[in-house]
Length: 121
View 1 (cartoon, rainbow, N blue to C red):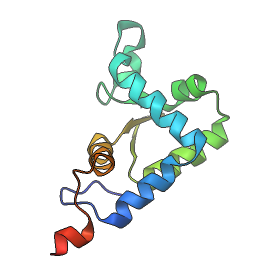
View 2 (view 1 turned 180 degrees about the horizontal axis):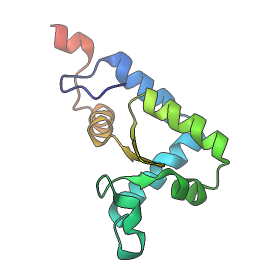
View 3 (view 1 turned 90 degrees about the horizontal axis):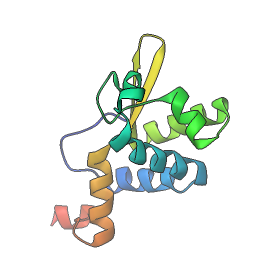
């Protein structure tokens, strides 16, 4: 799912919640959120070729203790739902949380996000 600048639909938000509903995927997102702050320490500078919020998938796998094939499956599900973004830099694959989508999800849960019906009115 490509990041859009316009409003997200209820279907987009539902797809993201569904992706976050699996324990492994929730663990992955939590790990990525935790690494976003500490990723670019001097000893992990090689993790941050894209930006300070990106994380090398190999290091992520070790961090969350999920088998590589299982991790790959869950990363694809998260990416398809728009929860994370992935990018390749040579042989390395990096991912990061889609901060804008998480802000939309939080706003919805806090009651400050409008629904499709509210936007249509």
